[in-house]
Image (cartoon, one colour):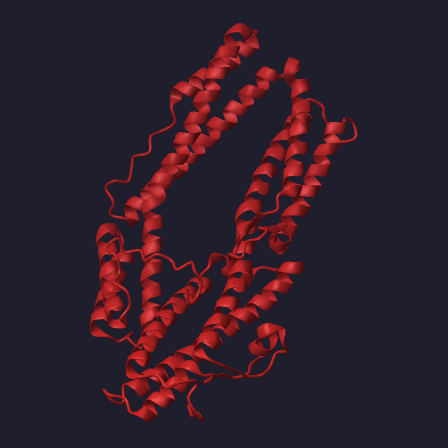
Length: 443
């Protein structure tokens, strides 16, 4: 890259070496952040979603910004490589080399070629977009930080809404359906009782709300006031909370109807539902355990016990008490059963979580191994004999059945350490999981 003169005083060799070391560290941080953004679950969801409204507009801009980020990063990488090549010409750089390095490292020596992404992305300082820009490396880092922060903010906000609201809406809709059935059983129907009309309205509102949240999540995002951190804010649950309160009001009204007529029956039905869910969850856990034992060599996978027959026997006793009208015996039995049933459901869910944990660990190790392979490939080290040998060994362990997780994790760690040594990066910690750099590129 030709220059006409130095950008300020000419650096000496020590200053050049320190600048190259600093720029190399920034390059590593930027690359790590960009890869994390590329692999972010929210970004993948945005790519495949049918978006509307403000989310569609912001995602179009964010996609352009992400493309431009990689363009800037490539230009930064090329400039850093050129500077390293010039410095490597001689052990003791000549004055001409130092002049050239000073211009490259301090001056506006990096030209970013024009593209559609450049034209569509926000221009620096609010100016009009141009087909090419010249930057100093420091300015280029600032520009990448700016684009990264705005892109990550949009992705994190959409992902936060999608992670929170649809699941809550679905849970509320399930509760709504149970309430509708209960209301119908006691004659609370639309057109015949105000609570029945309320249930119909809540149903329509929740259906529409879910559609809007899926297609336009940013319409339900409240940024945090005074916060400049990416993703600062929270999902806007105003509509959801209003409908949840409305459903609770309906439920209380139905309960008033049931107090005399069907209090006991309602509680028995609810108990059956909880125990049924616990039984289904335990069955799912037993099935999952068989899959884990077939795929993972993990003797610590806990045994899943069957449903306690005593609770079903006590529930049958409660139903018999109701038929016979023995309310004085039924009330304490129901109170005891309700607590035991909730405990049983909690136990079943914990069992399911415990037995599927090895599969989650294996998936995390697979992802980590492939991420490092992609990283070394970008640096032209994909054919390194040691890396190939260690990658294949780790891959065979992770994609074989049964998989020895402890041995596989050590194999992945050995591959990471070898890659880190060749790349000249920081040493991989013993626990194997490098901390995410959440400070943004160049931090």
